[in-house]
Length: 330
Image (cartoon, rainbow, N blue to C red; front, side, top):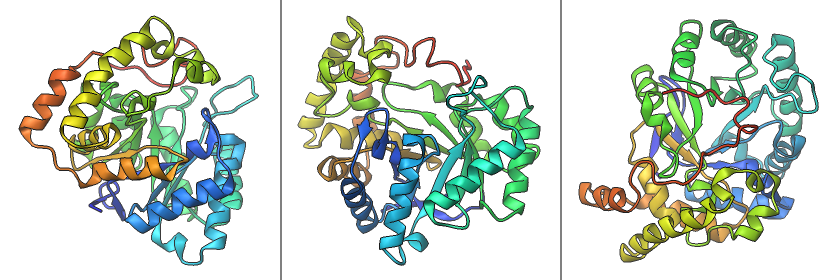
């Protein structure tokens, strides 16, 4: 498994991580046993990065990971662990970056995870009630307190990253990035590369569209997030299936699972890019991991671009409600 440096001067981390929202998130919950099997397979493959959040299952994802660490002595030392805070569920204020709130959330996460620190702590959603510089100052104090080794932001604009960097090195920025969502190429990926910040790509297989078994329309409608997501609503859903059928045929021609080809493409975007797909199924994980073994040639990239050119996806990646929190930029 190829490794990269997390941030400008952080630990070595595999250029592939597991997004633990799938253990307890918008696509339903996994059992402790299913989740532990995925984590075991990641560890065996040399995938050393685990990404979670305090809001995934309202702490359940962190509890699952904490139980895995407890049952496997030595596993914590092998892994680079990240969690997030800043979304205030069930609160009139949906985003909260107040210093006391963030530290309290992190303390609760540490308890659920059964650790005394994490390797990376993110602002899950930036709260514009504070300046980027002030939030970065809060994050620096958490580093100084020994509760996290590095810090990051999720779903921010390049300008916010640059401002935050003036107060504290930002090791990672998390953003949706895949063949179906290429907005990070409009300045965010470039800013990350310039500053030495790792771009952590979530949903790198397009919320299943870039796999051999995309969610059926019926299944998508059974999940509240997807049921209201423009790309999974008709007529966009059918158009997106038709478009990605071309990608599935290309992957088959290259003798690869579609998910592997999608992961290989994200990795090809640069040494600073780290995909974190999520799954609760070890067979699907094996397909995803296969992508780390593939080095795409210029010809391969041209073939991919021909079947899924920039802007192919039908529908915005979020609805108006889902856009409340992430920063737009162009």
